[in-house]
Amino acid sequence: MSEAMEAEFDTVAQWTAQVAADLGPEFHIPAACRGSGSPAALDWLIDQMRLAPGQVLLDCGAGVGGPAAYAAMSRSVLPVLVEPELGACRAARTLFDYPVIQAAGGALPLADERFDAAWALGVLCTTADQQTLLDELRRTVRPDGRIGLLAFVAHRDVPPNQLEDNNFPTPSRLVELVKDAALEVEHWLCTVDLPAIPPEWTEREEAVTEALADRHGDTRAWQLAERQSKRIARLLEDGTLTGELLVLRRG
Image (cartoon, rainbow, N blue to C red; front, top):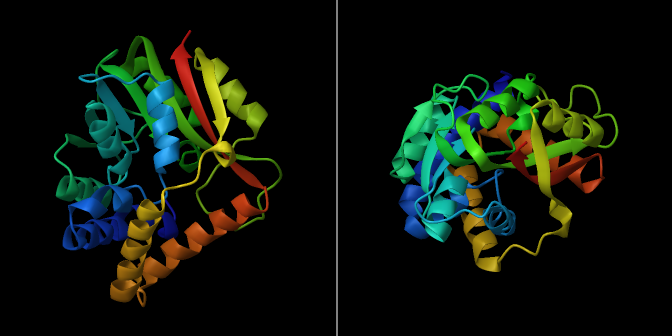
């Protein structure tokens, strides 16, 4: 893992949890969703995956746990978080009372068909072994269970040395990966077609970012994480990358 990704998912994740805890409970979920899900994207996934109260949801590559907490608040699901970075695991435990397992998405220490549903949000592009990740999601979800993805795909070559440790599939490659995992695309939506983010959510996210910059803006970890985030934002703005939401079913 590059120094930039380690900074983002380990060091900055712990700082984010501390800032959110200091600001108050209404900041916990927006802070913990930074970079991994907006309300509109999560609402769309929750609806299209038909998540229901009492279902057990695997959040693979859960980060600080915001999307899982949002789903629990919205639909009373029972989340289980799996995250490879220790700092993010600690951050999720600080903010939310859900089981957290430190493990890689490509080698889930979980039983077959253990979950009613699973999702991996912004995770696929962070691993070189994307097929194994999808295979593991399929293995751990029950028959007819649904799998949600937020995947960033590349429509042209990403400039060299722009984003270390990221592997953006093309749209056609993403289709191949899904097919090879014996999964079927049930729903697909580009994130540009989602409704706007509510102003209060944006305000809380911005308050967290400002507090992080005030406390840690002069550190190398913060600067590396911010540089990584800004590079992805530029590639999304110019159309090199798009965010794609998929709901998959076991074939």
